[in-house]
Image (cartoon, rainbow, N blue to C red; front, side):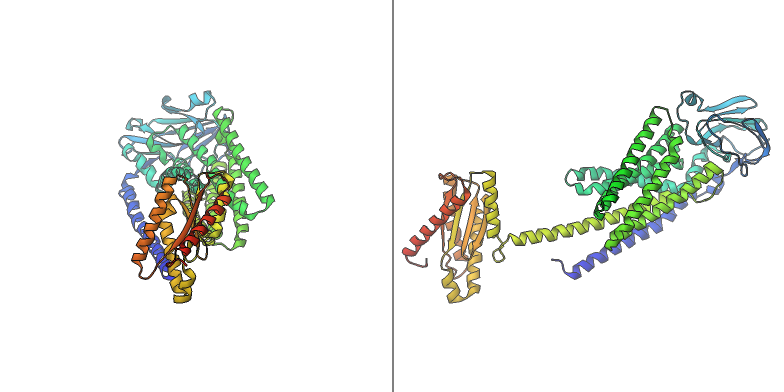
Length: 571
């Protein structure tokens, strides 16, 4: 049993380690951030093309438009948008790259009616998804003073209600600017992805030994999926030159699949409440989410309905799951456990972050309004939630290990003789019952009786008698324990049940036993230990272990009588 001093020292060390880790993060994060933002002011120089546009939407013309303030009714599949403006006569950039945000559209770009860029028309012709995200397009200085025309054909319903800013950067700085603008999602997305991959690999191996790590696997898979979603949603994964439609598909897949590990993680918390209605609703909600995810992915794979068109339904399902899980954790608070309080805090944090980003997304997509300027809040919420999940799992696992240790201690105490620390009579009887139920016939039973114990107790006291009993137990265990079990049946009686019936082996062991008694008597002054014993094997014509035990006991008493009749110390 650990002393309170040791426990407090361990707690202090854990607190010191946590404080050190947090301090390290606080110290190093600004340093890393400065590495990204160094020379950013000069590197982020760009040519803005947001003003002086003539825009035609489904035949309706808007003159002298500024993209910053221009809003329109949300466009849907098949709608056409044409943007046109005259480029400046001069700009300072060399090897320019036009950063253009495509939103579920096929795009063609012209300079003086000569096409120099095309994206998505071939995929639209095959009814495949086009995707959304940034594209960097070669934009040389030869375009100065010419007319730029951009034509869109919308590929999905309810695609957008505003046009994004159009900028020209230096090619060498284009991707760096994108990464710097989204450095928080980049940091958090990389962390969540790497953490999820590493922990998933370790946990899959651990699951081969114990299913108690299933919740760790859920945490790691959730982290991996949300990390990939963050990298795709904020376009930082584009640095790997992955096609835009593939990035969009990965974004939808990870978002649709991410709630499933969380649903599995919550199973134990729902069962702990022991309420049939909540359990039924949990199974219903789980089935709906899994089937809906499979159905939507199937429709997308067959190019019947793309994930972009089903996104709002999946968002509604995710919100329903969050509300239900928060309700479950509030109900679990009745147990007054810190685990449930921590988990509730984590659920509230991630729910708030998801609602924040969801409101910003819906405002931008459906109303053309930028509600919030801060980016990556869902990733922040997921990181906080992951840390809370790990803490909850650690506390839960520690609690269960303590309970198992306490249970094992109680079981061991129930089957262990307090004085000699070998098995007791209860254990021996249950062991013999198991042997008989299994029908095993290859056992030998040896019964022992310690001579002179009453005389020692009466003459020298029970302290001396206890030394004699413990010495006998040590000799019996030393000789026979590796071949079966040994136990104290009570008082001065002991037993050994060996998994062998070979006469030569039994004879060898009994000779070794007698030699060990002589050695123990030489080690302890005035011990004078003497033990009578008798043995029988299952092959001696009796298959039942109980009968074999009785036969061995009878032979032991015959041996005891012989020793008594021979005189000496064998009383």
